[in-house]
Image (tube, rainbow, N blue to C red; front, top):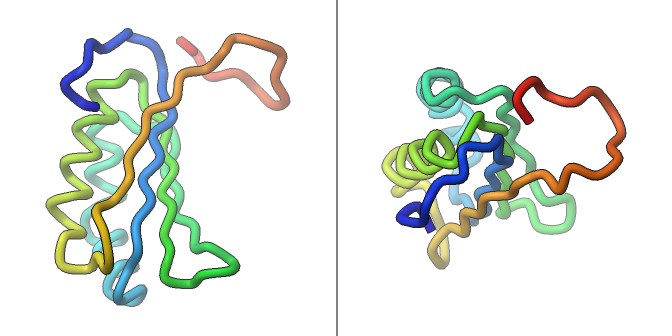
Length: 109
């Protein structure tokens, strides 16, 4: 998906995977991932654990464009490889529809 043409608009990036060790994930996130997300231009970065399946991770981050989100996808694959369980992670890129919204819009979105 990262090889596709970038649109130049803000995107929400989602990354789902199964995790073996949440304590190590927390350490990697604190020591590396948060800073790398900032460097890639993230406006927002949040980790979630599935409330019905504690091995499932969801990362949601908002980036200024698809290229920045693709950079974060590569960073996550590099940094989390040995923490992943099961199949390959699923990363997706979401563009706003431009419809009515709840909350404050981001500049440039």
